[in-house]
Image (cartoon, rainbow, N blue to C red; front, side, top):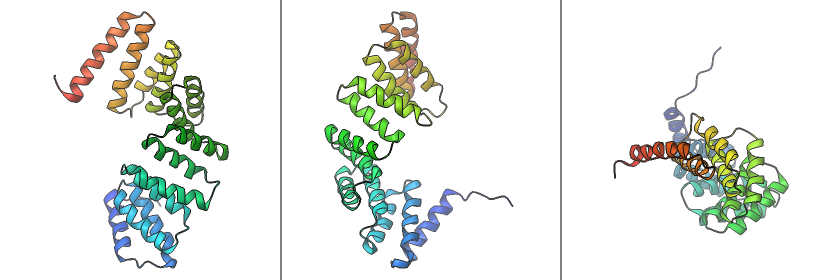
Length: 239
């Protein structure tokens, strides 16, 4: 028998019905949490928060609900509220790699890079993860620690599927260390990713053009600059 994938609208409708109709009791706490997860996956962060608040009203020590609630606040650009949730999760479990990783992201948004790096380091001591290496690598880029940035971004790229943003972060670290040929390689690989976003396409051409210029390949630098100019016009219109 073949299975059929339910449309997103059907999943969301079912989740909303569950949230509205299901009485908040300990017996259905898992169903409420799963509803919060469904809303989060479908980017309905306010609805996810509502479901998670119901869960935490029943079981305040539900660590996974606290972490997901914090992630909702991150998505809604509410880092201070997210920080409170992650602090609560860490108080419950001082060995939660995920809680430290996401708290690091909250600290990033609150412009506290030193605290964010410390949390990434703690998270990595508990569990190696591609996301954590990527986050810490970006932080090292921001703080000017380019050797450390490149080491972390290398690790991130080795650990799983690679997206354009990750490659371009490494390209930035390579340029800072005058490794221009390698930076061109990463930019070109990023541009060959079908799912690359427009903002990363522009970033890739800008970085590659700068690397070509530094290598003395002015014709290639000019070619990328012209493509970059056309991308800007396509994205934001004629000046």
